[in-house]
Image (tube, rainbow, N blue to C red):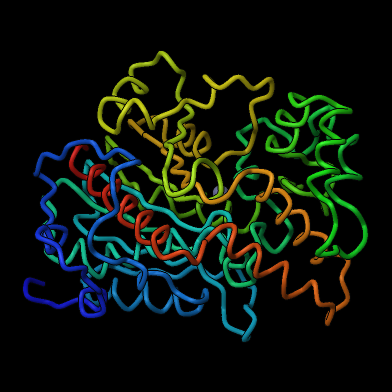
Amino acid sequence: MRGRVSRLEQTVRRKPSRSAGLTLSPFSPHTSHTPHTPSSPASDMSYITAFSPDYATARNRFSTSALALGCRLEAHSIEQTGPNGEDLTIDVAILGNPNSQKIVVVSSGLHGVEGFFGSAVQCALLEERLVSWNPSQDTALVLLHALNPYGFAWCRRWNEENIDLNRNFLLPGEEYKGSPAKYGDFNAFFNPTSPPSRFEPFLLKAIASILRYGISSFTSTLPVGQYDFPQGLFFGGHRPSKTYQILDQNLPRWIGNASDVIHIDFHTGLGKKATYKLFIDDPPDSQSTEWLKEKFGADVVEAYKARKVTYIFRGGLGSWCKTKFSQCNYNFLTAEFGTYPVIQVVAALRAENRTHFFSPANHPSRDWTRQRLMEIFAPADESWRNAVVSQGLDLVERAIAVL
Ligand SMILES: [Zn+2]
C-alpha cells in the first residue's frame, strides 16, 4: 500500500504552517505517543472532508476505501431501506491477522445520526492513517460501520423500532421491562402527543419541570432508559434488536481467540464542545480502570459508576461486550464528543421524536427537526469537525499503540 495517495489526502486543505505535514507521517503502532489531551489544538490538517452528507455516501466510501486497503469486508443487512430505497447494512472491515491475540474494535453509529462523526473517523482511518500501517502478526483492527444504519440513514438517534440501542443490550437474566420511578411523571413533558412548534418555550417548561420534581430526579431519570413507553425517548425495546442479533451472532467470530481487546465506540452529544470523555463500565478503583487512565489520560477516562447517579442504566453495549467476552481482557471505551449544551440536545431529541410520531407527512416540522438534530449531533462548524476527527484518529492510534 506504500505510495498510495488517499482520497482524503488528495482533498486535504493545509494551512501554511511550519509544522504542516506532521500528521501525514506514517503511523507506526510501535511508536510511543504522549497521551492526547482533549483540549489540545486541532491538527493543522483539515478533516472536514471526512464527513459524508448521508448514510449511503458514507457506506460506499467506507466499503470502497476498506477494499482498497486490502481489508476483508462483510455487510449485514438489517432488512430495512433508506430514503432512496437503499439496503441498510452494518458493514465490517477487518485489517490484519484474523487470529490475532490483540484486537482493536472501532464502532460507529450505535446512535444513528451520531454516525456522521464516527464514520468520518473510520473513513479517515482507512483513507489516510492506515495507509502506511503494517500490522504485526499479533494485532488486528475491526471496524464496525453504522451499528444503527436506520437511524443514520433517516437522521434519527433511535433505530427502526424507536429503540435506543445503547439500552437494548440487556445481560442474561435481565428483562425488557421497567422504567425509572419518575419516568411516568415526566412522560407528558418529554413525549407530547402533538407536532412540535419551533417557537415553543422549551427551556422555560424544562425549568418548571425541574423545579417541580428536582434536578436529581431529572438527571437520574431521562438518560437511564426505559422499557415501558415505546414512543418515548430513551426506549430500550421489548426484545433484542436486529443490531443485537447481528453482533451476538458475529462478534465472537470477529474477536476469535483474542486475549486483549480495546473497543472504542464513537458517540457525540455529551460533554464540552469539541472535547471528549471516555466512559467505562469498570469499577472506579479496579486495575483495569487504573490501566486505562494511565494509557488514555486520567482526565478523560471516567467510570460510569464513579458518577453521582442514583440509577445505573441497563442495556449498554459496553457491559454486554465485557460480559460476553469475559474470557478475555475486553476494554470498552464509550468515546463521547461534546457538541451543544445538554438542554439543547434534549430539546432537539424531543422535537424530532414528536415529529416522527405525530406530524403529518408534509408538515414543516419534518425538515427543521431533522436539520436541528443533524446540527446537534454533527455540527457543521469546520473547526469542530476538524478537531473531533483529529482527536478520534489519535484515540484509535493510541489504542493500537498501547495494546
Ligand atoms: Zn450516543
